[in-house]
Image (cartoon, rainbow, N blue to C red; front, side, top):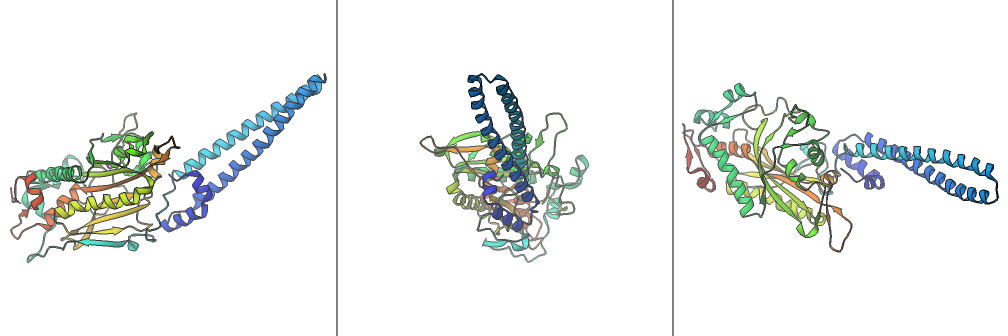
Length: 428
């Protein structure tokens, strides 16, 4: 959430940022009107309080002069002024509350380095790594490969749940587990993250803190009991909120956490997209990287977090590219986002496998995560960052497609073989 005072002082800059995102600016008109209403209430309240103070002094003087009737009349006037001041204070508080509610729906201001554009067409490729594999046969997609190998069962998953669920069997399940352990080991042993195992169910406050609520409730799975809890859409939610409503010491930062969790999304806004296979599922595994940073270091930390996610792809030998998202393509909470896109031979295209974002103080303000510098300084908001390190299911399918062999088997990347206990997946 944006700072109220910042928006008030930089209304035109925020308006330009919203326009660059393709976000309606009507909320800012309402914000300005409420701010004017608030200012009027404060000005009138201050004037009436000054009159009350003056009248109180006059009442004392009248009583000393024995003019009790006149003094009593002034007391009634002061009482009326007090009631009016109370009304104005309620109006001021109501305006501030409504301003905060408006700001809860307004997206972040993009960093100056973000390319301006309304959609993914304005995204800018930053770099590529590796080369796409060359096949002397027609490559299959992961669904055909997984089905023929007996490691992927979508039909029975739909029978016990619904569409967009999957059953992994045998070497398929082992590959998923191997990838999770491999990613966690690299990030903890080589990149310095602390492994965290958070709850997979969270409350509404946690989802508000990271920005999923109130706008994206339709994409969430909500429990039906009276507690108002939700299945997590990503480990970003519980891990970022671990320090909610806390004041950290500046010396603790950056805090670097990595967590494996299953993730649950209704995908309410994506009907008809990526319905084949495991690219877009209601339930999927992900290893998430989360950082809490000093504000002055957060963009350096973003570059580091992105490199940490890239390193997984490099160790697995998967061709990928890094794309800087445009103002209109990144999430509302983000100030800057890099997407990592892995090469899928079956689509002859790059597909997203990780988004690495700096939210600056947007999430921290919602979740009240602050830090204090040395010398008893006033608390400041941390900057929060996160990124997939990586989406496990998409890494799984990328390995199948990029390492497939003419006989339908799949080679295991060398870095993953100690975790798999095998060099190849063959038909079961």
